[in-house]
Image (cartoon, rainbow, N blue to C red; front, side, top):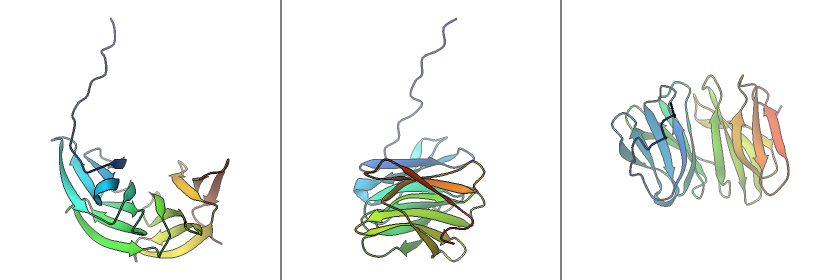
Length: 178
């Protein structure tokens, strides 16, 4: 018997120029960074409905906390990271990274106590560590044009691509900048 063909389960309208999507660990919500409309769409997967939350200019990347209660969004042109409650669908806080930071990617540590943001624009080339309890940058590491970030399966390292180059850099998530 032939396998059934894949089919689209649902199509959900989101903001302009959706750029990045992340799914909560329990699979009930999707968060979409809408680059062209300074917003994120939070999709209820079961009902295929969405709500919109305004964030900074040009949201480009999104990550969801390990417990699924929050999301971080990189606002590329605003040089900031927005922290969003996925319980209330509201912005809890926005962290300014300073002029020219151009945050392009974000990941959480496995335990959710830290997040890492790549900043690769206008002469600022680093990975910033955000301590989630204070929602402040508490450490950083120099990296050449860091772009996308990914966490190793056991969480001890993170890897970043170096834009317009031919290599990948990795670092220890426990001793960043040490």
